Image 1 (cartoon, rainbow, N blue to C red):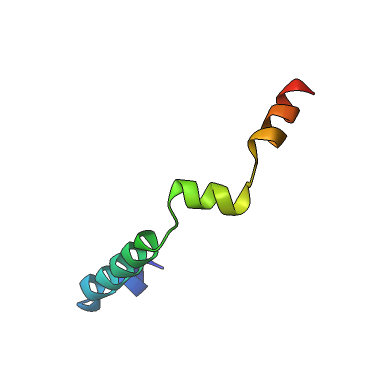
Image 2 (image 1 turned 90 degrees about the horizontal axis):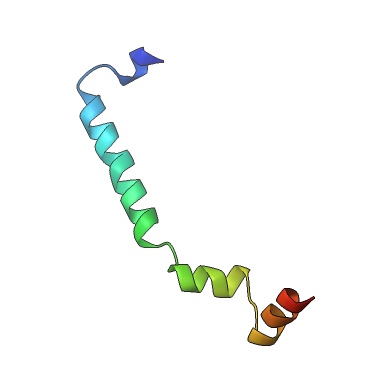
Length: 52
């Protein structure tokens, strides 16, 4: 596997990986948006869960 990262193209390849990661991170939802989408809880349902 180490051989695949040898040579002059390694800097270019790592740069492309870095750009891909940066793009994905920039397009992640905010914490609030994530929670609202995947964990929608209303105050009444949250209170009901706490009080049993």
